[in-house]
Length: 390
Picture (cartoon, helix red, strand yellow):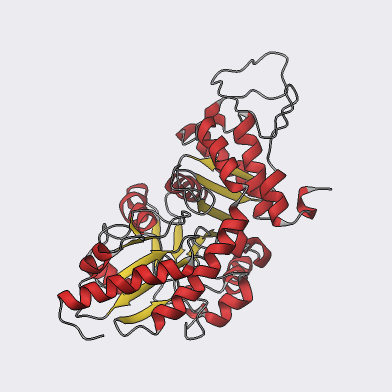
């Protein structure tokens, strides 16, 4: 059978592995060499060319999971994003970017693209008109992120594809928050998928990596730039990422279940002002999420009521960790204002709807009752300190 005929669990487990022909080991061997022969070989291999045996094999797994022809593995999610954008943009080009995106990507666009004479506009919202109103004759890319970080807003992928195909624009999505387990944008016609593989693909908070999946033509174009910029990943980390991805479906589905239950619980809590989770029926984009996602992810955000200090609340948690990243098997929480979106000005955060009391909650695989118990004791602790009645 071909990999595109396998179920996702089978792809995670088997596709992109390397057969240990010498010792018949159950897992892929690691090829740590940084120097390979160049005479009498089919491929001239070099780590910076993204084609060591481990790099090449793992790229096949990423491509298969995203239902694409090819993939590339990078040293970080931002390396994947920056290489991809620069491969398709040049001086005088223009890009349309959805209103709310990851803070690191926002900062890259704002700080670096103007130096290269590349223009971009952020949309005012998420409707078709919002995107169309920003398209110009020199627009080359529409860049989206859905669900978005940190407000879990959903962009209609069929709408984005329609706009792009009619105008010859390349569509790019940051698919990190969904992961291929919950969403395959290629099914809706999106051209290029980028990931922070540090997150759900890695899933254990112990590696940093990025990934891109697309057609062979698009990947060749990204590779042609990437080989000069040198953002490749070490083979040991590639091997760790392949190991982690074998359990991605199992992990993510468990996180999906926990997050949906916790979102419902938080939505009813008197000290919570608002919950952002596309799996809730009161989420404004719930119907779109149902149409284009298989699961609603393990990520959610919530705003505390004004009288509750978010830092005091997080400090009262005992099981759920205050942590900078996300999507690990352990639950973690952070303030976007102080971390992922700290580089944005207060005005930019306000424009994106990111309140000071917003907390981003990455739900892990722990028992649901233990997570609820930890949240409840933290609410009780902070309410008592701040004299708030539950």
